[in-house]
Length: 385
Image 1 (cartoon, rainbow, N blue to C red):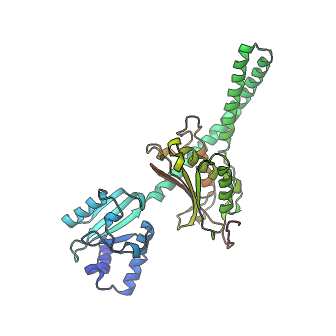
Image 2 (cartoon, helix red, strand yellow):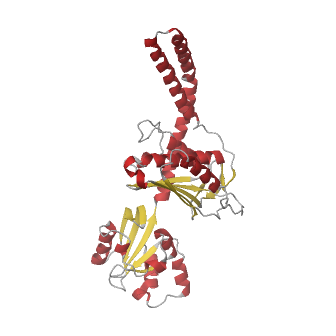
Image 3 (cartoon, one colour):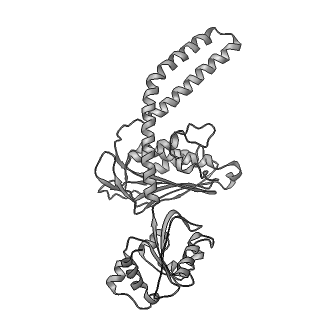
């Protein structure tokens, strides 16, 4: 924490804010884009700004006076950090912390903690969430990998498809005159040729084709996917919906968004094991959040991504070592999977100028799609009755 910012915070919370700060200073600190929380000597929340409310997902009225160990497990490294600040009287910075509890799930958080000299035992905490930046960086890597798959598909289409057609045709000719014992082998050759061709066809989906974006009602897309899931692969599971009916339309391609959400919901259904099936649940939600801004594909314009679509399941979770590579081509936990489904999801969302995030732990895996809204649209897109 720099000395100027430290003096500003200390002025605001001097003697525990028993003396109200000047209105202009209070307004500045309240609207500061950095989450700031002050703790009293007993680790109770004494003050926080609006950014901290958004960061923690809890209002100030609910947090003031609440002990920090009601929000975080007592063994969280943040408590050791706070103790060091008090005992040594110095500012300490830590990076890549996790703030995990039933009410909070934040990872990759940088924290600065500083003592309040005028108020012994009080500590001020400043948080910085770098997860969105890392997610964006990973997504750029995913898109590069998808382009590699596209180039590979073009080569395979030219070098493999034609020989495959010849192999399949020869197998059919042999099948017509083969003995019963040999016919099984010719059928096997034909089926394997078809399987390889289907894989090449799937890879060709990664080709760089511009998408035509129109206003899309994301709730119609979700309802369509829900009906498909409920009548088929997820008929044995409970599907919970929590939608914001006032959201304006997404700028996107309806069929591709159906493909993305159908893939995510199908993965969620398959993730719930036989042992968890009795309580298996898939949660679908939409919300308006303050998103990040990034350059739209093929444009210098930076777009806002405030619409968040969430697909969550209560399955066993994704192995931790797999999470950083989840959207890379050919990475899968399924014994019969090709590993192209989530890579395609990442590519389609990237083509829409959006962002995809995933968080997973045992009993909870959540995919979040951050999508752009259609400009200058004010229609109310409530679900039909």
